[in-house]
Image (cartoon, rainbow, N blue to C red):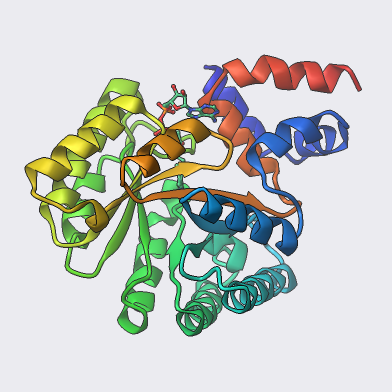
Length: 305
Ligand code: FDA
């Protein structure tokens, strides 16, 4: 119930205005977002690398209906990738992009071109791009664009969501040699016709998807903070005789940071997803929806305006 209400609020521009002007919401934002500028993102990547962690940087923004904004987002990624190269951070740091921030809802062809330019710049910097997955209405379009990007940039990463009923089959399709697949549970409000609604079903699907990815020839990226699924991931990697460098764990900036360090200390590859920028509203609401315990803290910050 609460999760649905928060995810509905994530799409409301009225609530976005209220939240955006609440001074204390900044302190909640800082828990999950590295800062507003490119320099903030680079500083976070540098600090994570010093702790033995990899990172993927996400310039916040989504659902744009303004082509100038989509081009601005593309340009920010090009600047960021140039900076990663110049500062010697490309070995530990890649980028994550949302196609809806690159114009997918206005003109999918333009979103493809923008993503392709970002992939080209990443290839020059000797790093990679992962294409985030958004709500189910965009899954086909995103996978279609991803397939075209992969034709020229085979290491472009996909994201699949275990809450979608289709995902086990998508995992099988994508777990080919050279393919990088990030597996997450899924963060959007989805109808029962396409998505499992109960936690147990989503978790069971996640395990089936781990099996499909670990059994395949690609590079699985297990994106979860769920301790049981992390343990199952470790177990299945052993079962399928995979080396520690043939897959990785991924977690979000600010969530279970000690666990990120613990896994890295045990020799696993661990990548932290680092969002930055001032368009943090949708991202923040999805994080609150995942953990209703955070909501009371956040609500207090709104009423004390
Ligand atoms: P679950 O929600 O069951 O949480 C397990 C435990 O983790 C909780 O009990 C708690 O301890 C901790 N935890 C989880 N969320 C927390 C929070 N917000 N605050 C504090 N503690 C928290 N989704 C999507 O739809 N498209 C995408 O492209 C991506 N990309 C992505 C990248 C990476 C690197 C990660 C880690 C996640 C995503 N996601 C995503 C989000 C994902 O779908 C999912 O919503 C969250 O990861 C939460 O699910 P968990 O697997 O962590 O399990």
